[in-house]
Every structure is written in structure tokens, then in C-alpha cells.
Length: 184
Ligand SMILES: [Fe+2]
Ligand SMILES: [Fe+2]
Image 1 (cartoon, rainbow, N blue to C red):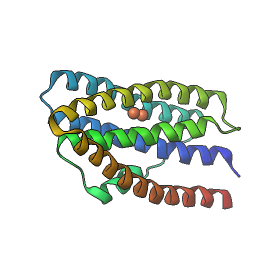
Image 2: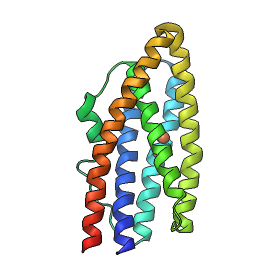
Image 3: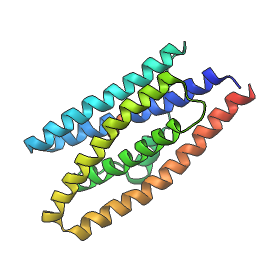
């Protein structure tokens, strides 16, 4: 198998998820008047665009070009639920997306064949993703005061189920594309 080509394609999937994640955060910024929320989201947006850039740099360092992903993770998600417009739904969606990113990167970091440069990138992102999960979780807890704990947890569960379906579909596509590379 051409490991370089494999990594270039896989990192392109990661990069695409980061870019579209940034798009979700930007939508949240534009939907809120709350200054504290805006501040956190601005930091969050800077992190996600940085992550997309770090993957771009890894791809370049491998001598490749980022591959355009037409049917990536967020496209699958949108097909499940469109794009929510209220704050609770947007935050719940952001939270489950962050959970997925953390899990994916953690799994990748645990592989036996990760090169040190990629490991460093994964480590840097992990610190950021931990903060993303922490602050979004805090905001969701605040929303429990106005929306009710039951509604918040039901919303999270709904998005977890949608996300799990979307991720499974995306992963099947991703694996197919990666397997095709191994055949070459
Ligand atoms: Fe990220
Ligand atoms: Fe994140």
C-alpha cells in the first residue's frame, strides 16, 4: 500500500471535517448577541481553522495536495437534519461533532504506525478539542436553566443518534475510497 497516498486522503477527510466544523461555528457566531458566547466561539473558530491548516501542512509535507472531499462528514450530517437554526440545537450539534473529532483523533494517535509529526499535530488538536468540549458543555448546562434539563438532554440524544448514523455512512465512503487506493 502507498502509505503516503493513504495519509494524504485520510488527512483530507480530517481537513474537510475541520473546515466544515468551522462553518458551523461561524453560523453560531452570527446567531448570537451574547458577548461571552461570541468570545468563546471566536476562539473556537480560530482553533478549527488552525486545525484545517495543520492538516493542510501535513498533506503538503507529504508532498501532496489536499483532496477535495465532496461527500464528507458534515454533508452526511446535513442530509440527516439540514442545519438547525436555534441555539440549543446548534450547540448540541456542535457538542456531538466535537465528541466525534476527539474520538477519531484519539483513535488515530493510538495507532502503532503514526509518525512523530502527525502525532504532534494530533496532540496539539487534542488540547484544543478538550477545551471545545468543556466550554460547549458548560453552555449547555446554562441552557438547562432556561430550557429545562430534560429538553437539553433529549436534544443531545437526538443529535447523538443522527450523528452516529451520519458518521457510519461517511466512514463507509471513506473506507471505500481508502481501499481503492490500496488496490492501485
Ligand atoms: Fe478541530
Ligand atoms: Fe473542535
